[in-house]
Image: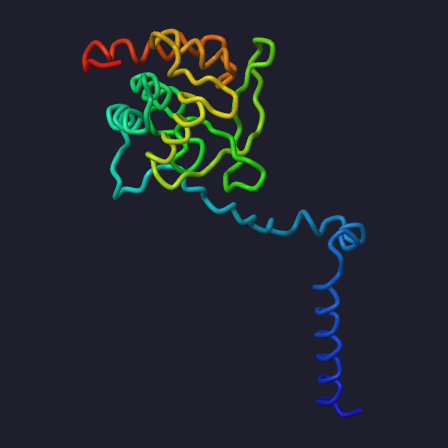
Length: 202
């Protein structure tokens, strides 16, 4: 047989073998060649796309004072209380639960949102679980929903605007199950009391 022809045939067989090798099921291949996996460089796993949860740089940082003003515009009787919720729930805007979600508001099944771990209290015991948190279009939109659903009367619920004092309103947020932390009202007061002393208002 012609030597050149023999080399062509052998080359073709080698290429075909390589194709078969490349398409073998990796589990089967590992069973046949136990050392195969140990000699391979692990394939990199693509990281999930980042979720934008904070304000854009053009907006600038969202502050306690801004959220107090947003709460007043939205109709909160106790805007300092709403601003304190912003401070507590999102670390002063540093850790929102979703895009512009500064109050840990959960998303409905058909609403856009992001799944994140959260701490909930069950019978006074903190437990970590995953929940879907809602996205908003702006800080004001986030505050508007908080005030509409928890400060004003909403679907049979008497909002905390009805309470005679800010302290009573803070306690009512817990009583009405906005939060599951039994110390929620105390934590809020620790925020709004000094702010009210320095800034004034309710």
